[in-house]
Image (cartoon, rainbow, N blue to C red; front, top):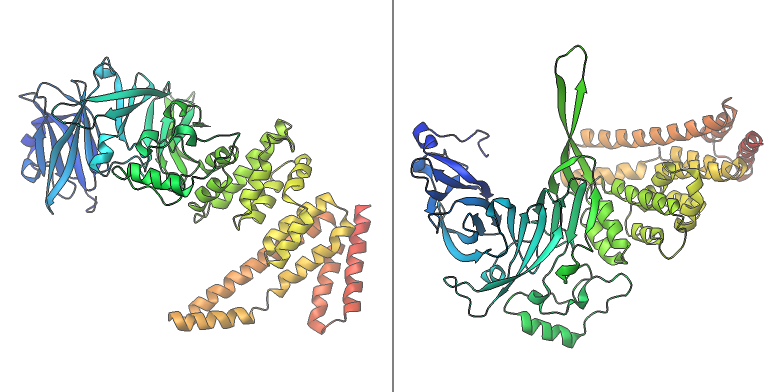
Length: 561
């Protein structure tokens, strides 16, 4: 609400005249409600603005049902279309029109009878229209409406009806036939993704009590006029279409949709009978309530009950919980050899601060799963594909070391046989001035190799961390940036300096903690710091510096004996 206040009835008589039967739905700022008159029992659909009160004088539009003897059971919005399922077992499709800025109206476009498909209308728990071309599930044109598929939730079964419409279609004399596909069983509720995220163009999320079953990129092959062999294949690569084939496809489907100029992507399921086989199941320990598709998050609630002897009642609490689904979909794609599709999908979420955490979960889950199943480097292992996937993102070095530090040492040999030598990864961090990440790799090196080998690396990293105090170039660059941006120099530069010192302090603290952990007497730490302190008394010769470093290394080697 833009006003931040509840919109109520100013006239209580208007409020008592009707009840809502069949649900409500939002279309932009308009509330659409299926209402029943208390006195006459007649059914109508009403439109209210969220900016005004709910009195009859402020009603935007109202219309009676096409069949006055039926009652509304379900409402759903798909693009600019309102679908109404009624007790006469018919779906009525309305176009939501806006003739003027302040007026709305509904125009009946299509009637779809479900006689012979649904035996008892009261068992229908959900209904939606799904774009046959798969673009975010929404309908935007009349052509898409005519070939739209229908999703029903009946007796716990998630059903998809694929429509066949004759060329001489007449709304007054409908002639529509359906192919029925059962996507899932024991479904409690479902959502249809209404946004395109990267190359995830459509999705259906079905809650089955144990988690969520995800159907991704369901497309109707007939809507594309392409052969169903374009379905995802696990054992064979899909060859791109030739230019002549693409020209043929464009000419045959120009009346329904505009095809992309490139061959169809491989992450598509065109054979709807195979939809259940290619679904992804995500187990959850809480009850999902919403899918934040563009954030990569499943939102839900978890309940807890506590009983105390001092109380005569139980304490019931509900807590909100979230779950990242990115690593599930990425694993799904990589396990099917869709590496490039996984990269494209991952790019859509790279902007979020928790993207690196999602990648770390991906690597950790795959590593432990393959270790438990003893896959190793066999053909069924996807860890090499995961590592290649990580290389496309700047988070790779941080993700690898973060995963290693949270994983058993027994798995490190397999992990680093795929990702590379940790010494090489440490040098990459040093070359890129990623000192905090290098500190984490130093702990890995300390575990895998003798102290005498890692002694020089420790001193090098500590010295480089202290060298970061020389930020003359940083201040000069910042000063120019402040002048160009008209920032307040004092406040802005103080913030930069404070953040820089904070980073240096954190790096040095981790290095000091590391040196102290391998030598509780503190002598090794003193020897390492002595090299840095000597720099304040004047430049050291290379020979003298090397001698001091060798002394620290020898000290660390002695500790390792």
